[in-house]
Image 1 (cartoon, rainbow, N blue to C red):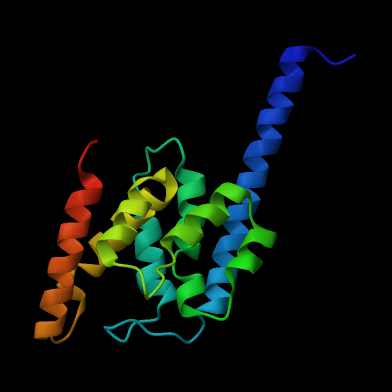
Image 2 (tube, rainbow, N blue to C red):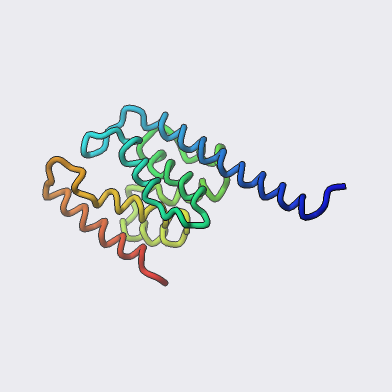
Length: 165
């Protein structure tokens, strides 16, 4: 008979391995789905923006593995052929929910979208990193008036997401 303490450790290890597998699946799916896409600066979208969002997360977070998983998937429904239904089938419910929340409906008001994100800790952490990367104008060769307006919108959203309740 297995001791209860040993059983608990095995369960925890199994859960950690499942999260690591999801992370690897998310990374591979994202690289595949974003293949040949370029960002506004003309840089490979996966190696540039997606990876920057993942690396911009707070590594001391207790949910870092899940946050990284969501970060790899944060633009996948909006910008590729992958559907939210596919994400639901491939990933755990909390990952799929965060990805769905991060997928902006074009009809939804931007600040309503940001308020919805703030209510989900995984989506919130990823969106903060996403907005920081998107607000970095130093990555652009030429800055237009449109870029400046977009950055102002992102800074307001970032400020709202960083506010404590």
